[in-house]
Image (cartoon, rainbow, N blue to C red):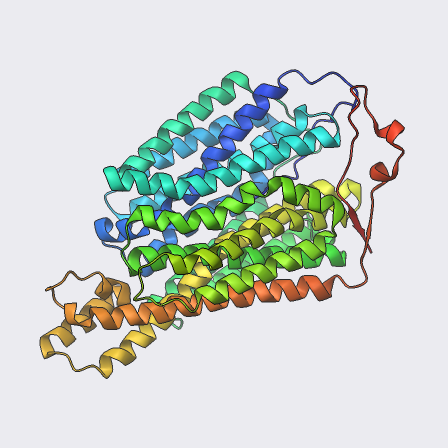
Length: 548
């Protein structure tokens, strides 16, 4: 996924100036850092089945492994960007890699799933520092829009490569040893990245006018964590359980307080005035909904192949090459399309492809362990994601005045990551709620021995149908294994439908919400080639701008 940070950056040299000292080293260090951060993000995808087996988890506990990482990223991304401007981007990236090394160590040693959550959250904090720090470090040492575009494309490619390779890495180490070994590899990668960043990257900062919005940070983080806690725990604890209701109520109060704080803040964490622009508002909404659909589909695929079908981790990794790989392979194609085709059209097309892929996944047979049925839908979702992830940022940035581009970039980035955080939470809630209801209905109509029936009810009451589905042959409630498998197939089939519906809504909002907006070119693109050309003969260019 392509990320853009809105922190203030040092003014780039003119297009014809000599290359900034530290350019190559900074680019190499930034690309290595973002690769490591994304490996940490995607690593659990192929390991959910092993987490369930070794740590004896149930459904919502697996959801928290993924959600803990993304929540940490979303909650503190803005503040990390400010810290980089105040104290140095290189220093921020090094601190982030150290946090990832610490979090991966905790995960590798985790005796329980609760400790694994802590490791995931530490990894998320580290990645939340590395994403904006590495990208802003690149912008500070590039000259002109064309060189910056090439550098950011390479940075994005390394990020996408990390997402594609990570499940495969987890599968390989789980196959030859233990899933814990993959986290030790991540520790080593993080430490190497820290050393390379310290040795190669140029330091940069831009403290002028930058300060932390502490009240905004506190209210936003508290509100988001509470609301997501309620959404994750609702399916198992019950939507009317007191802790769930309190979490939603308090979370809503904190988020309302966040809006009030931001409206009066001198240096807001989240500038709400941006939403006066229709194109920016539409792109922001579809960033949340569309990315929810994508990561929801990824999480459902991981759960379907892992804890539900108990497939080998290496086989689980195969669909993720199709889900994540196109975002890396199609970077040159998407970059050219953004210069020639309206970003809104790319967004609409991408979301349509994602919707079709998710709807095809909803028709999968849970009794079929073959991977062939995943090829077409996973590839459609992956190509759709490749078309949308950069386009949503292009629409947001090109629809606001230049002086607001930094805040627009940071806001779009945060909202996109919010969609990523919501994906596992929403689809996990939908899947497990539906699976629980279906299993109860199946069990009530089943003719099982009394002892097996009682054991199935007891195990389901403690861990849901996922727990019953994991009972070994000959164990208590083993006779109900088929009923649990069918219920889980129905639940995650519904989750895929929700992802498809979300992608379809995003496509419709993009197609109809931007009616009346015309595609234009920026002033820099319209300037004569002679005036845009630098001393080395290269011509600067920017993406097509959307103007109301």
